[in-house]
Image 1 (cartoon, rainbow, N blue to C red):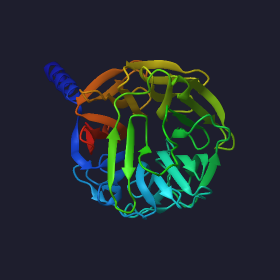
Image 2 (tube, rainbow, N blue to C red):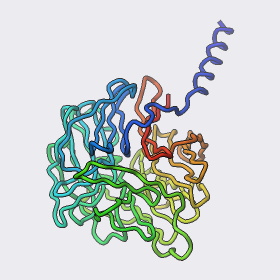
Image 3 (cartoon, helix red, strand yellow):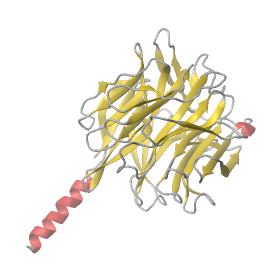
Image 4 (cartoon, rainbow, N blue to C red):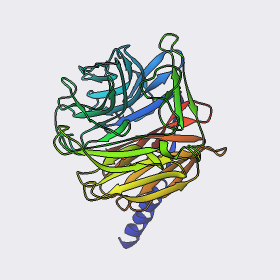
Length: 390
């Protein structure tokens, strides 16, 4: 019995050690910026395909294959997504005369959310996320962060997409970008801007997604492409970097600023495991950073710094209260993806390099007593692949 127990322990340790990121679908589409899995088998991916336009894909077999899902034609391209169940999900992107957010209650067809567009009639939703801990409810709660008709804020639904409310954030220092929704009423919103880039609502030419990434989408010809810029802003542009985090504890009725920095970086993805514990990634002059809070945003400490003008951190996600991942890459000639892993609540991080890709979005779904991870990643030749961790 003792020998068997020891052997089982060794085999279990080997199995854990062999868990790694691997290519799931190579060059699946031209642009993929959103991915969400709800369980071992069911997930959605969002982006755009050169020649056919905006794209939503669905897998029912854990990423072994993907099928296109129907949607309205009112979105230039999709930039984000969130899913509550295999049939209840939402997607966000850039819309003209449309809200830029679509949802499904069937899993097979997405329709425009009932969100007022305002003026100018352009919407651009950088990110979408579910409210954590809503798995036992029939309908999902989703928050999409971005610009809606010239006003920045959050479009939110608590009933799977049937109805939406728009919560604008006044007097912002720059554009909102990502949101985290630990409860129905407590939300965190990250944002910022970088040097010498045009505004997000300008649909002429390339659309800036981050300082390192821009996309070109033509809604008439259905042409789409992505461009990656290696280096961040240089000296002399210091005043143009702005990074901030806002928080609400009353479901978007009011917001307060809990983090601000000018001159060094702007924020990308943010995720919170509960109302007090969050992680957020930033990039800008000098390199990329990861910050965390354990006291509801009262203070934020830097947990990770990746030096170099070509360093980028795009997204961060909790797996559980102890484990989290962050992704990005170093976009110099080596073009190496970086997948940072923490097993101590986001304090210390270990790099898992992945040459040839640039990690952009993460999602994790429970599988038995463990989990599977999925990610979108840009390739050096301007295409998008999906990765899997199991």
